[in-house]
Image (cartoon, rainbow, N blue to C red; front, side, top):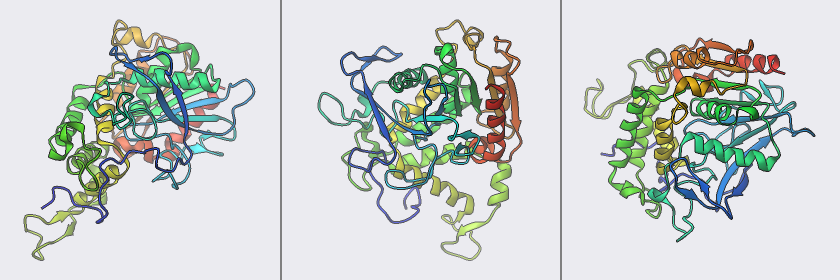
Length: 395
């Protein structure tokens, strides 16, 4: 019996990442490091780096209305808009970004890029290696959140954006937003960090480690060399399980109980459901999320981006956390989800409490929700209200 139940019978791709053979959709591309290498934090060079990005709204004459929105672990550049050719889902923050919404594209020029190491158009493990044209796979160097931000800075320069009106992000997107305000303090006019942390905790690292172990133990992972495996030949079992593990940390016991309770999804052999392989509704929910990610993401990118999150520590090489946060000049909004078990509220409160810029507009907000960590994506009205108010305060 398969480890993971399929959502349907359509074969799984070896990699769900975007390729140049797929529809471009709304993606735009910026390529840099064509003559000189882009040096990563770990010291390794990358050549011919491409960052995929999307824009909404219009950049004004003095480029003062640009907002950078940073995505989380399995997000991409499609922050807003409908699904369609090149985009398998609606924008991941469509309730927050758009005309008349909290981040109003009638007023602001919004940029969202797929991170370095990603698989939706930016250079990452599934990209062709310049030496042989085959996917980098595990030859791709480790990237950090700082590397992602420095690559975004290259994009900002190309767009003519010297200073962001605001940098906004939740979860891993919040890590990028913090790094922006610390690495480039004069280029960020306002900082909004949601459901995130200044340094990954031991428990966050532990959860990520379990998921990585599940993925790499799939025999079809083949030391990362699965790209030519063909339909159903990739590590879809291990990858789906890794996502299922993560999905549990994204929600709450209360929400699972409300939505699923102890309801059975199927009863294979008897009416009581006491056979070994009958499934509860919550298991079907986890299978569904595993299935969806396998079809739209690359397993190696999942590993590399997850590692970047584990390595996240704004104080590394900067004299510690306090010295790093002292670099932030921008007024800062931190937002927590009160039921978040993955990035608990105390982590956002630490950021807010250790700011040294003494800006009276600094503020922490707590969203009450049963949705857990995913509340930053789901509670668009409450989260959007905080963002809208803060942008108005910092105009």
